[in-house]
Image 1 (cartoon, helix red, strand yellow):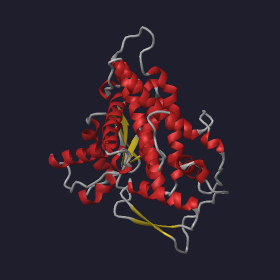
Image 2 (cartoon, one colour; image 1 turned 180 degrees about the vertical axis):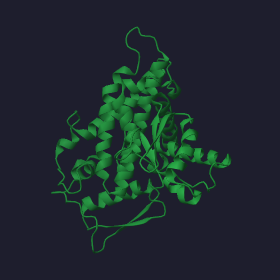
Image 3 (tube, one colour; image 1 turned 180 degrees about the horizontal axis):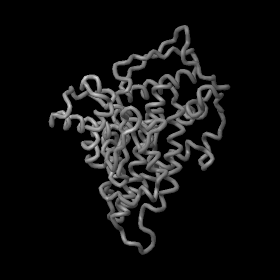
Image 4 (cartoon, helix red, strand yellow; image 1 turned 90 degrees about the vertical axis):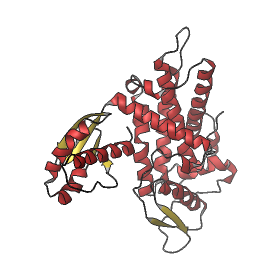
Length: 339
């Protein structure tokens, strides 16, 4: 279950409590769902009870106690605990969460491919955290600053904000300039060389970014994406199609990949909020490495018969490919189907 889906589940719980007369409040437009803080537990936490306490005329823990049974019975939720002044800490049913996560990514990834790789059409990881905000990016006349700002315009848009780039003083976004012109690396490698390092680090403009081997993180990302496309083609030749609904054993088989996919929305939000596109770049490396470790378990080997498990693994691999393509698109880098 994605944070966006869980937020909707929390709002449904509030609506049921209101409909049954347990709470007398206006159902809010959104519920904030985050990673549990200090003293918390489970997979996610929400402060919705604290948010509703005053309009409900009740203590936050009382509101939390009212919401807890409505939330506990929701599909995909394994347990709900109340901590602190009234935080609801949610543990997910891992198999159900995996099915929801993969299904959501695949649905949105298919929309993204249909829209010709336009990064604004792959909404997995999107939120309204910056909705209504106009963010001015004041940058110097410098190639790295220009590329970073161009990328942040897209990343900030994924969180509902709008970024405007200005060349004016005082400069607010000043990444360490590149030591030389990155253009000879080509558009994809040049952008990666400028975006992958943290903004306070000096980028390396070397031919290492063009080497097609595992020492090159950009190659690993693009190769991992190409491998997901190859797996889909090979599966089709075997008469196997993907089915996220069959995902059950895969969370234990590929925990790093599931974690990386589930973390993508949080990373995207952090990259937008803190103006750090390097966070997205590094996370794509994490997704790619997890996928490359998992790829050999996707399709049947030797005389092994195709099964529901293979369909589930294929769905997971295709979801990873969609995230890689969407993330590269936000960075302005192509994701080839063949490499």
